[in-house]
Image 1: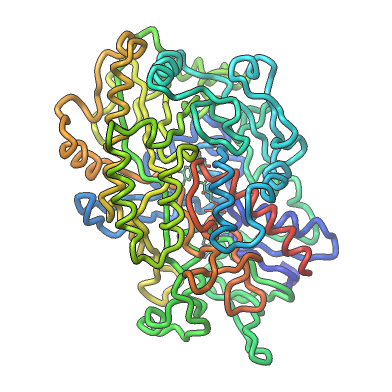
Image 2: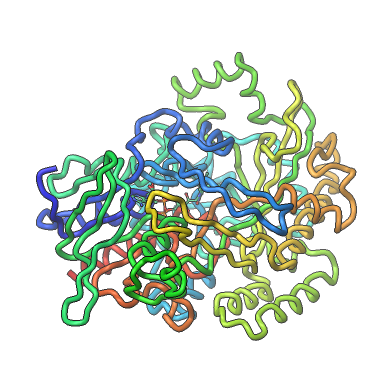
Length: 587
Ligand SMILES: Cc1cc2nc3c(=O)[nH]c(=O)nc-3n(C[C@H](O)[C@H](O)[C@H](O)COP(=O)(O)OP(=O)(O)OC[C@H]3O[C@@H](n4cnc5c(N)ncnc54)[C@H](O)[C@@H]3O)c2cc1C
């Protein structure tokens, strides 16, 4: 590397980091350096073939940070592995390629909570800017979805497509949902996330390969003189200077090949290390709760108690059913002969099971639809008692979401395979379909903080899973809805047996015990550096600038203050696109 001084130093070449870096480097006079702790594995087939994306859920690889939660008191003391990509493209290289969008009112809530200018209307242009949406006439006829230029992009880097393969087991599930009052929607990505609809995927329609910030933003720009990516570079600390009472970042210290080095920033340092690592970097740099920093002998530069708190995720429970042999599933790939045929089909024609992640459709429902009779009123009053006296404004906002009939609070996704749940494995020759239920606005708030000043040690992750019983109650209602689904005529004819949780799990208390044992996250952490007013626990302002600093911003999932009813990747791209414009305008 010839130069060690750049206009912008971006830390983290993940989903958001690569968007903001390449957009800033559009100006040939602007120099950008990106520090990434992981390596560049962008061209490896296991990260490109959508059908292999779920393989990354089996256990940590070298491209993973290997985060395990602190033992979770209300989840049987489990220490839960929560994957995070340590690789160019970040989690966007290792994730399972679903591209969702939440409800317009959920984005409007960011502004209502104090993040001026962050609302659905202002994000739509950036959703569009980040994507090229392709839908065929056949897909349009089948799903009702259309290319609508009000909401969809036609020239952005990330490809958005519909699954090219789907199991015929989606048919009885759709009929079952309809019988239970869930409606098919053609507008699930247009600001109204309620209903059931097809997944959309970040998959290139021509190559049938993953489209990510690594493949779509970085690769086409990698030879630019003014954009440098340093891999294997683990940031340890932001370097600050006091200039006339202002805290100015002048660069970043990082480890590469075991040596501590410094890179200088003329203009800004942009932190994009994701919801788990961003709080650590801030705390190591002296920005965080005073008492915690002092405990670990980190000199306090900004007393900012919000850092690492307000952690939100989507929490799940699984269901697996054995279905009739007429219904197809990805489990056939366990047979080497079948897998070989599918590989040929994929390579030669870009068709078949390997073009997708196995999930073809999901339902997003409000409790008004999926709760048993009377359960909503009980949940409202529990939510009211949780928010009574809390200073957390995001909790208050989500209590409003719960009462709204428009905003979903449960995702019910169908996977054409036996999902790895910890309970059994697919029996050879049998066919399965699984459901992943996820609560979208959990009440429990987690945290992630340093436990030492060692930059190479992982911070302590505490999800505080099921700290509020209401989260468990909602998942129990989800499983009970799932069982009502299995009792619909269409599903009765298709399903042979419920395998997970299984018939022995009957009462609400037994279902709760099952969830405590098997519940998980869907790896959608946000809000650990929330864009909120400082007095409300905020870490960054509406320009994504860290409070108390002159020129440090955070651009990643950690700034999103409140969770929403979608897989978050698309929203993170939109946030990063908008951030790039904010930074350019301030230059
Ligand atoms: C297994 C899995 C499946 C998922 N599936 C989906 C899905 O299907 N759809 C969806 O919408 N979302 C999904 N997600 C979530 C989604 O991918 C993430 O929310 C999103 O990618 C986060 O983007 P980010 O920019 O905030 O962070 P990241 O993409 O995690 O980027 C952070 C980057 O910073 C680097 N970094 C961290 N610390 C340092 C340091 N100290 N120095 C240098 N570099 C550092 C990391 O290595 C990483 O490259 C999934 C996530 C996982 C893990």
